[in-house]
Image 1 (cartoon, helix red, strand yellow):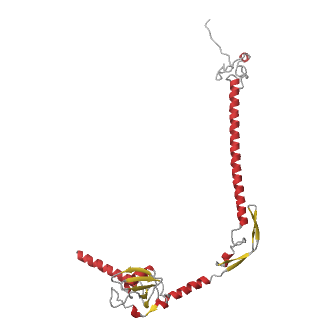
Image 2 (cartoon, rainbow, N blue to C red; image 1 turned 120 degrees about the horizontal axis):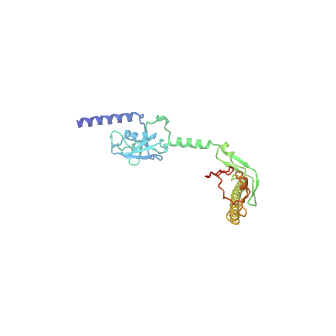
Length: 284
């Protein structure tokens, strides 16, 4: 039972390998080269072949590859420069994994396309360099004339002389060069500094006024409390409206007779009604 499971697993792995190999096109031999300058070393494998190297380079997005010393695999994006191409007899080392093919030499590389794209789309190193140079040179240079200007900063007058600024950026970017000689605008910087100082001074003044007003209110409240305490003590511990212990007001509920009497504060309870006479009954 275990052996059958192993056979099934081996069959699945073989099928998967076949599928992976069919995902890419056929690798095409481009010749023997003495150098592959922009290539990256991938691996050393005892069973190395061009097919094995393809499985290492194509999935990583490389358009080309190379084998050398029979066991080493290298990956690159372009076919090496034609000046590095040598006679095929120098790449006579047999591939370690398949003796019917050669995998470079001791110091030489057999180069292939990886099958990731059509072989006609894979550029040589010289063509790729020319293409990059053409893209770089296609960006126009912009020359911006600079007028002289006078800027006052920190009490000193700075004279910016006339000149020109050359930029490798696009014309749209060239308009961003300011009129201060290609450097920062000193007038704008000075204005920004002044505005910042004014803003800070305003904030500091506001904080000072707030603190001063708060302290003044605290002093006034303290003065009122002290005045109230002094008045209370001067009146003998009685409310300020009392004078000499005599009541300064009359209760309309009091009997007219009682209202003529001098009554001390608090001698009659306010919750009693004295407007009606109380009749007393006695035994004859």
